Length: 435
Image 1 (cartoon, one colour):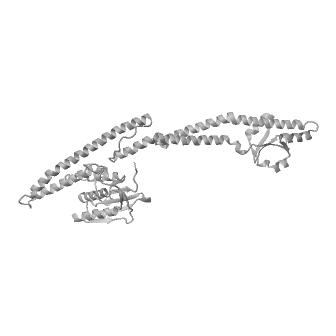
Image 2 (spheres, helix red, strand yellow; image 1 turned 180 degrees about the vertical axis):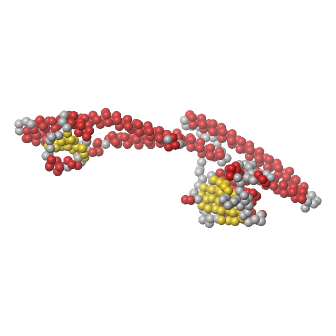
Image 3 (cartoon, one colour; image 1 turned 30 degrees about the vertical axis):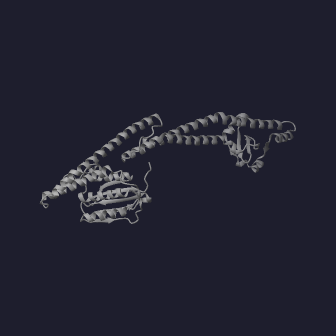
């Protein structure tokens, strides 16, 4: 049964307020009924009963008919035979059992009481054993005046719900800020400490989160400085080694070629280190068509590689806000990953998300794929999807892809194709949350 309970703090607060409101309304209804409505009904029944008793007493006296007619003119109480009552609309009046019971208690006889809700409220009474009807017009008492209780309950309920919703929103606003800040920290974005206000418990949680965020930010800065320093310091000796290798007398020697090749690999690894630590500093967002970036990456790749890339692009893909340099880096890393670890051909596809929510593109190879249990860890830094290749590469290519995708508030998904090969699909939203 607990699976049907609200899960969010806001929904639970609203549910609690609604429950309290229902109990409050029920108690209010009972109290008003007992101490306001019931006394009024008893007073009305007493007055109507005394009017009828007075009319019958006058009518029983000598010359009673004339006196009864005069009494009717003074009191407004009329006695109508069944035919007259039908013409006056007694059949349209509503029978109220509780009013009939109250009036029967006053008259000490069984009666039927009806109320006609016309322009002026009319009370119809028929005493058991008598076919005639008594009618008493309640001048100035209209139907609308019988609903103050309902209006009161609706008004109180509406004000309570509005006030409760405002209170719940105010109470949960710090939690919303905390959630957005935690998502930003996960993307590597730190915009300073959150304001430590709200309820004591929430303020304490916010204070602890600020300490944690500062620590993570400092660790990120230290790691960036360390990786940038190492990358910078390695450039000079690598350059000297390459220069020495190229100055060797026999440049065709296999050892010389191996040294130059290894230096190129190390420079490529250093470039990936630099991309990884500077993944938040790639430029401003601008409306760009991803198909144009795909063509640029493919053209550059085909200048340097003999293997061609197959394209299956949606020509109606819209331009959305993105960082072109970052997206080109995503595409380049995915193509390099597909060529290095997968099988040919490499296929790039693009498309649109439903209802203009964004765009997607996918890079697929036709290799053996990777084990299902390793799909998630592929995007972790320094993790290689293919461990059988002797540790080639730095293991940062897909980690950089994930960082750039998170910077766009998008998603990246890797899966093995049914007919072989690895598919990596990137989804980018048309609108980013401004936090």
